Image (cartoon, rainbow, N blue to C red; front, side, top):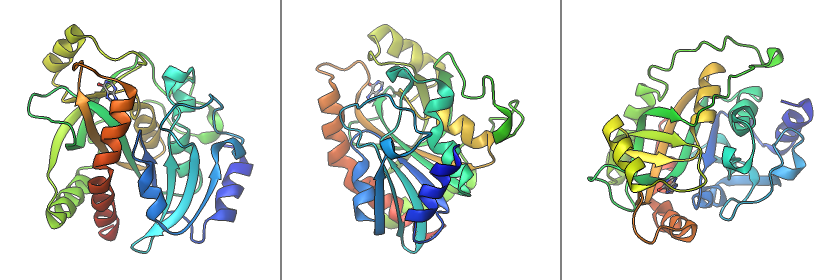
Length: 265
Ligand code: HPA
């Protein structure tokens, strides 16, 4: 992580961020409701991979606070399907660690595999299956330190998941547990692939999150993750527009949930 990026965050943040939040497709809205918010474009960050724009991803870094908890928010992320490496895609986790955050909350839009899931459902990720064919710790460079052979048991912190459940109860929101399958994309899955994913125990499928979570664990950051089900995986009429629209509609409940969680941290 370039020192200039660390300096840029320190210069903009009113209080040093404790929690980093990655906002996925259509979920950027949370950042707009933060107190004392300030933002800059990813293009102003030296270390942020420059992969151009993807519709629905604002590409901004936002500092601010919720319920008095200082946060660092990433409005949009870099995906490997844009041509970046897993290491580059994990930049939000690396920057969060570099500025001293101890918690990373990742959100994503995902296709529902489990028949119990419907569009608009919010899933608390309990575990993932890395089917991206790569890993952010390949060639783990020295300066950022660390042993690449990191355990992935309880990568999605059980204590934080309990906090999320309590927060969801308080808000009257339904939060179901699920396993996230991370695929490279950018094409969506075939029906045969969805049947296969179902047999692996995956409940939702998406094209992100896995690199950030692995890097965060390697850097000693605890993780909480949510998938917003934007469509049925391999469903009829699936399009990026549908995914973004479903994200926007359900963003309100995820925003409420997030604030209730931060209040409890
Ligand atoms: N598959 C993969 N990624 C996704 C999907 C999907 O159905 N929906 C949103 N992101």
